[in-house]
Structures are given as structure tokens and as C-alpha cells.
Amino acid sequence: MVLGVLAIVWIVVLGSYAKERMADRRTDSVSAFHSQLSTLQRTHAGPGSRSPRGTAGRPPVSSASAMACAVARQRRKNVLLGLLTVALLTVMLAVAAPGLVTIGLAMISVVAFTGYVLLLVERQRVVTEQHSKVRPISSARPRPAMRQAPARQTVLSASRR
Image 1 (tube, one colour):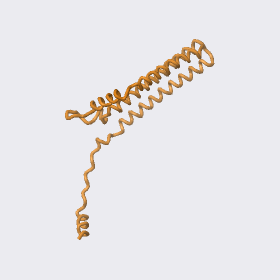
Image 2: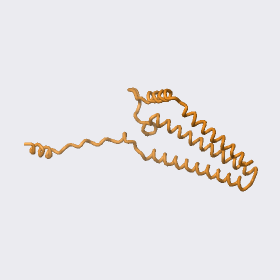
Image 3: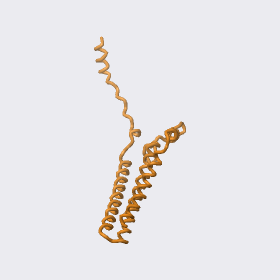
Image 4: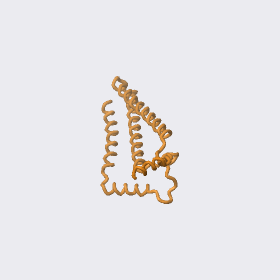
């Protein structure tokens, strides 16, 4: 019975994940092109644009990379909720029907959830550190142009005679 409940939970979690993945792939090329074109039109900086920099001193982010970040954020959220659901269900199952297998499964799921949360915290720390330390190239001051010394120009003109 325990394995049956766990199998049903996994089928629901993996089924919803597969359904989302398949829904993303069903778009035709015309609608994908139209979506990309509208994204490009929104990112076009016209003469009335305010500033070339993004918020909080960060460089502007293209809408394609912003969309990729949003998709990754949603995927991380889905994984976190899935692990939390599995951990809670296996812990409730271990409390309802204590046994070596159910307690082991509950411990494994709780450790997996805890490990994923720690990975997310570490990732957030690294991203915050990068934003505070990395300076965009476009904000760097250009170097002054170097001029040739007049003596060298004289030597070159003398050698051509």
C-alpha cells in the first residue's frame, strides 16, 4: 500500500511536469517567430528612451535572457514545490504506517528537499555577490588615445628620403 501511494504521487508529479514540457513544444514556427518579433520590437530603444542602464546600477537585460531567467525561476519553484510535497507525504505516511521502509523513504525525501533548499540559498548568495562585484564593461571609462612622439615621426620621415 505504501509503494502504491508513492507511485501515485510520483505519477502525478512527473505527469504534470511532462504535460508542461509538451505544451511548450507544441507551438508552430509562425507563432514562435511572431513572439520573438514582438519581443524585439519591445526592446528597441527609440529616441525617447531614458537611460542605457537597467535598475539598481545593473546593465540592461535583453528580454530573451529575462524570459530565460523567468523560465528557470519557475522551474526551480516547481522542483521545490514537488520536493516539498513528496517530503510531506512521505513523512505523513511514515507517521501513519511506521516501518523501516517508510521511515527510510521519509528521511531520503527530507534530505533531498533540504539539500535542494541549501543549493538554492548558495546560488542566491553567488548571484548577489556577482551583482555587487561585477561592473559592466559599458560603464568603464575609455582610455585616452595615445599619440606618437614627435621624435619618432621625424625618424620615419628621414628614413623615407
